[in-house]
Image 1 (cartoon, rainbow, N blue to C red):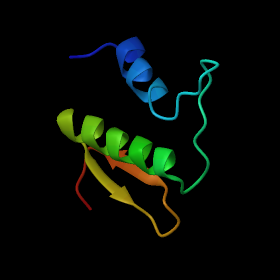
Image 2: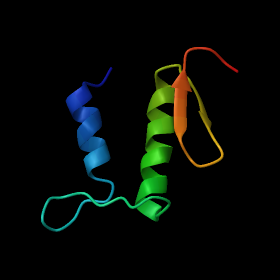
Image 3: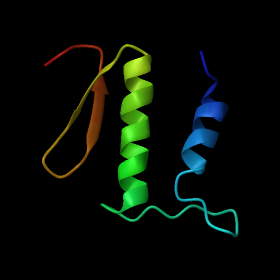
Image 4: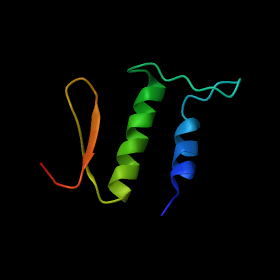
Length: 64
């Protein structure tokens, strides 16, 4: 099982800028990549995921 710090560092890589910041504008390729990463991690931990009509990602222990 990964630590929360290692998981956050994985997310930091998505949209990393040359000044060590992070840019993920809504609906851009980095934002979508972060969503996919979150879905992957949640699934790895046995959670069920779904995305609503505007792109919010949810993870839950119960399948809807």
